[in-house]
Amino acid sequence: MKLVENKDYRLEPVNVDGQERWDIRILEGEFAETVVRFGTLTPDPANQEIRFTFDIVSTPDLDLTEENKGLQDYCTILLSAIIPDTMEI
Image (cartoon, rainbow, N blue to C red; front, top):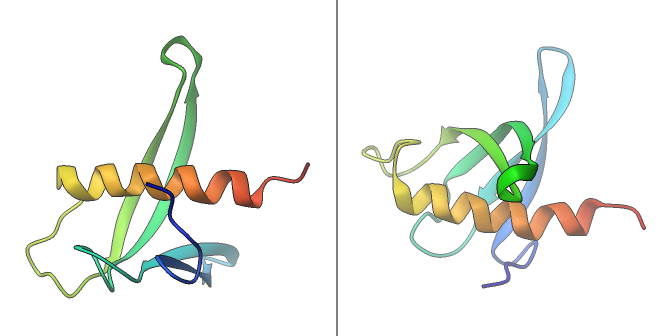
């Protein structure tokens, strides 16, 4: 599944403690209108993965938490879409 910016998600600039950050608003699907903020991205070369943390900034689903496996999987797909699109070649 390849997500498309401004169709499936939107990057939203925010200022957090004097630092410019980006929140990601999910626009479509099961988590529509949920806003997440990624924290630390850590390379794991042994497993050829990038480990990450994220927080839910807002969501219309009052039962949704960061421990939700579906949301965790979706955030992995989000990162897979965002990282290549933001890297300079």
